[in-house]
Image (cartoon, rainbow, N blue to C red; front, side, top):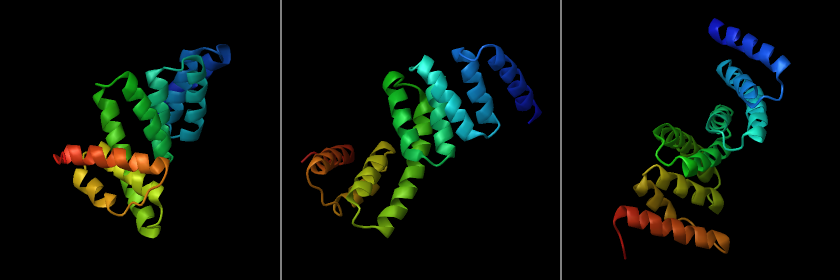
Amino acid sequence: GEEYEAARSKAEDLYMIYPEDANVILYMGETSYYLGQYEEAVKYYDSHLEHVPESFLGRYGKADCLKHQKQYKAAKEILIQILDDYPYNNSVKQELSQVNELIIEEYKENVEAHPEDMEKKLELGWSCLQNDKIEDGLAILDSIQAEGADAFSLQNLSGRLYMEHGEYE
C-alpha cells in the first residue's frame, strides 16, 4: 500500500546518495519485496550479500523472493544455509517446511509424469524426511533404482527414514 510506496521513495532517495551502502541496498530489496517486485528484490539482495555475505535479512529475503518466483529448490538451499548458522530459528524452520511442502507437491507431480526420474524421487524422499513425512518417504524408497553417487544418497536417505520410523535393523 501507501506505506510501502512512501518507504520505497525514501529508500530511493537514500540509494541516490549512498548507492554502495549495504543497509541502503538492503532497504531497496525489502521495499521491492513488499511491493511484490520479487525479481528486482533479488537483485538488491544479491548486491547486499556481496557486501555482507552472511546477512540473515539478505539471505532470508532472497529465499522468500525465490519462493514467490516458484524457485523452490534455490530457496530451500538458502534456508538450509541459514539454518546452519541459526539452527534454532523457528521462522526459518517454518519457512523451510513451507518450501518443502511446495517442493513435495511439485516433485509428486513430476514423479507421476516421469516415473523413471530417480533424481526427483530422491529429492522427494529427502523433502519428506525434512518435513517428518516418514511414511511418505518410505513409500518412495521401493521405486528408486540408484547407481553411483545416487546409490550413496539412497542409502543415506534409507537409513535416516528407517531410523526415524524406529526400524533399526
